[in-house]
Length: 495
Image (cartoon, rainbow, N blue to C red; front, side):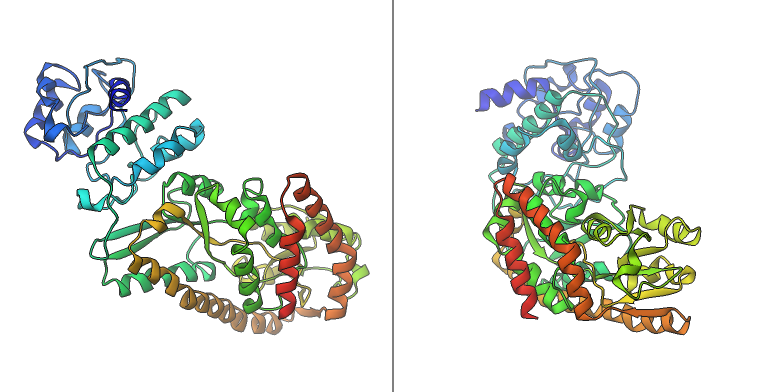
């Protein structure tokens, strides 16, 4: 294995920690990566595989500046081979190594697009990295974001990742963290802080308090460290420890989880929604589906049921939807089409303008905080209550290895944090309703109430055909769609 590691490192190098041997910083800065000034660096720190930044003898650019300003040294490539055409990659001096041995087999089988996310070759703001590197604190390998962009091949990505992994695996014996260690988790989220994020914000506060500041969860909002559509990929390779995402953003990756996005499912209140989602998360087939992404569902986002808000004639009868143009996504859109409506997909930020200009006559959003957030009430005449056409599933997920690698005390803290986190979510949504619904009524918006009988009729005529189509699709993929849908309906009806 070590012969393979040396061969790989002859091609690829990775700067790990500029403080390994400060005495050679100037030599590396002036002599570049593999000149004679660094020949003596082969056996630095008992043979630790620490090497200089990639980009051997590359002239110009920022390599020399980075080597000087970010800690400089690091050593030389075994064998001294170099490629003058290769661009430089730099890893911040506070890089945090982790269970790379466990990641290696995954990384070697990843396509270039995924490894690009892992290696950070796409320009992005620098990712704060935990310091205090020690052999006892190998928690996670986290390259610095914002490196110099470079053209490369899938094989070079694989070599870069595998060489770094082999080197670190050979250099360090991975040890589990203890409760005395400081552990930092990063959560990739999207959008601003809002009712939906109250859950993970509560978890972060809870574990920090219970651990005396030793367990910190950093929530990166606004897709700061990963596009939300790539969060599942990032979780799989351990680019971050946790993430929030909606199944509808990448339905092909976890098709069975799509059961929670089907229209007109029974979910009369947040408590029932929580029970339904937790039952789905616990299903063996769902766990197996997520495990393929090295991921586990931690908790639901409990997004409220959608309702419509619109202009023109209020749809007081089911027949009134015929011919109405509506903003309705995914399964809700399919169900509305069966009611005779004409669904359209419009990004949330454009919904206000579309409704105001008459591009469509009604729009569905999670009720009521999203309607108020996007100010649809300012250009609407009515809103539905009790129609509850569905919602989307946007849970918080954990990387399995990161969770299992925590000390027992920290895992228990996360488990115990679920209850207050769910309570915070429910309180945030209720607070929004308590504020927004009276405001809608005060503004003169007409409330269009759908009775349970009306909703049951819609479910029979519009929702069940969508359910049947979904189950048929799951069956074609040898997935137990009917089984998990039956579970959802049974749990939902327990009320």
